[in-house]
Length: 476
Ligand SMILES: Cc1ncc(COP(=O)(O)O)c(C=O)c1O
Image 1 (tube, rainbow, N blue to C red):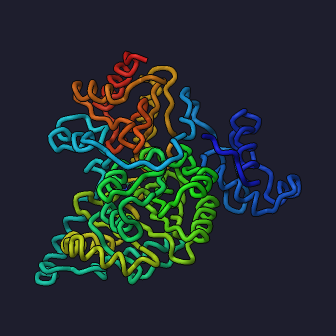
Image 2 (image 1 turned 60 degrees about the vertical axis):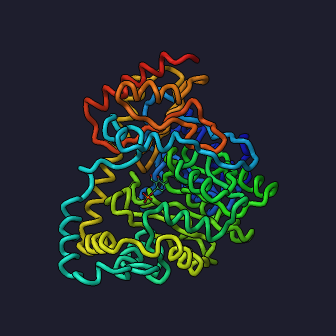
Image 3 (image 1 turned 180 degrees about the vertical axis):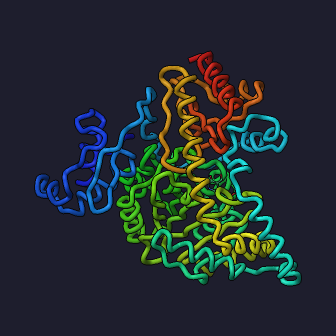
């Protein structure tokens, strides 16, 4: 279901996008100034700014400070991008089966070329700095670190997280934050704080499979919303779905959704947050990839526009520092007390030593430098994977152009079965994540997610070549 654009800025953005794609404006050309275009189109300057913001998020243009907007060069990719998804507009009970646990089994993960599970390679993470910080924490906190660090968790870590919210223009205080065991526990606590079994939660289509597992575990029904591979949730479609169904909450990943890598433009985030607040519907925001942007600016989380506490912002250090530390957090807005209570009921406390290790590491001042290096490594790895897919996959394949994170979503020619491909690939020593894992409706049969968490190597090139060959031979 393609949603017609409902707002003037969307109409304007789509018109410009078509002009840019047609090559009418070339890379480096300046776009009309905001004032000029607003006069010409008889729209307000803020409409033009929102339209340009959307084009920026689509990777078509960039702003130069004090100079205006310019056309970016587009990769000369032969492969098209996937289209906006079109799930059925009705809620469904979630049943993920055992595919996910098979894919994540330790034996399988250790033995296969790792294009399946989305974790950054260990050599990209600051293991030495973390080790030093852990040793220091153990020396200084010989007694305190061996007891329960009851919710909301380590004050020092909450201070560091609050300080980092300044990067995206937030003004969190340590009192707003609850430490959790990874982002997944944060998401689970939020779901439990606002829903009960049988309730309906709106999600992206496709969405991260562990979100589906959390919903399955709690008996929550999934309402999949059409999602654009670059700009995320289609707001018009969400509004139509909410008019038809009693939606208890939304659970979205506005910054670099997994698996699409879609990043919602600021204007859409703001509109989403304001509209949900009017409706009294909480937004559970998964921002685990927000720090992994390839462009110069960290995209702001939706919570940046939240005035009334309806956004529950969840994240973790799993993608940037140490997945095994299992340290995440939630800033749950108006649901703070409920989340603290549920955290106590769920696991009593998050492990003290990893909290102290990460707090000490953040305090050392090394994190920003590390993030800069990690981001440039990941953007290069995604680019290399994209080029390899273009070299080896059959004609008719579509692929995303993420502007952050480290996943590529590949849509094989219609009729290809990604579950068969996944089984064939495993026999060749390669793991991939087949598309149906990312949908409660079992959609995306002809899609796969490729993790780009590992530095490029001839082994990866050979694995992508093998996948391409296998994909070309699949019955269509
Ligand atoms: C979108 C998204 N949310 C949450 C998580 C899980 O985060 P954590 O390991 O901190 O629980 C992941 C991990 O892949 C993810 O991709």
